[in-house]
Length: 296
Image: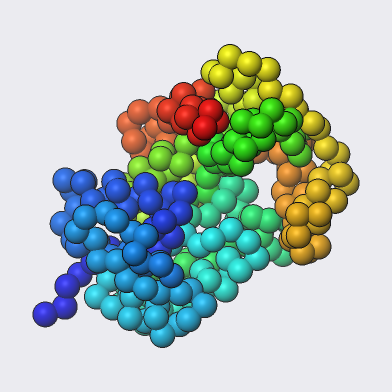
C-alpha cells in the first residue's frame, strides 16, 4: 500500500528545520512526513522518515518523491538554485506530486532572470523554478518570496563577540527583515490549506530596518557599543572576492545589495499577518530570542 506523504527539502536549513518541527506537531496534518538531506542523520525530529537524497543526483530524488503528495522546496543559496529546483520539480511531477510550496526570494518574478531587466541574485536564481511551477499542469503551487532573514545577523556573531566591527554592505538602505520562523509558519499553512494555491506571497517583517539600525538593536541588547564598517559597492565586491566567491556570484550579490541600498524592497507587506492571523516578529523580538548567539 502506497503511503501518501509530505516531503520537506532543506530540512536542516534555516527555514526548513522550522517547517519540519511545525509540521511534526500540527493538528491539521494527516499525512506522514519525509525529509531529505545529504546527511539524514542530522534530522532528529521524532516520527519523520529521514532519507538520503541529493539534488545533484536525480535517481535519489525519484526515490524520495515516491508516494509524496506535497513538497516544501528549499534549495541552498547560490547559482545552483535553478538546476536544483528543476531537478526536484521534474522528479515530483514524474512521481505524481500534486503540490509544491517553493521558498523563493523577494523581488522574484517569472521574468527575473532575463538580462534586459537588470535582475540580480537571488531573484534571478529563483525565476526558472517559479516558471516551471506555473507551467506544470499537474501541480498546484505557492511561491514564498521573503525579505532578508533576521537570522542573517548571526553571520556577525563571531565579530561581535570578538569586538570587531560589523561589515555593512548595504549602507543605510532598509528592508523589513523577517524571522525565519514566520516564513516556516506560512509555508506550513500553504502545505495544509489549499486556499493559498496559485499565489506568490511577498513575506516581510513589520517594519524596514537598516544594518546600522540592526546593530544598534544588538548593542542595546548586549549593553555595549558595536562598531560598524561601511563598504561601498566596489569595496563589497572586493570583500566577496577575497572570501573566495566566484566573480559572477560576487557581482550578483553586490547587485542585489544595491536594491537594498536604493530602498527598492523597503515596503512591508501584510501577507504574514493575513495568513497567520497575527503580526510577524520584528528584528528586536528575533534578537532577544537569540541573544545567546552573540554572547557566546
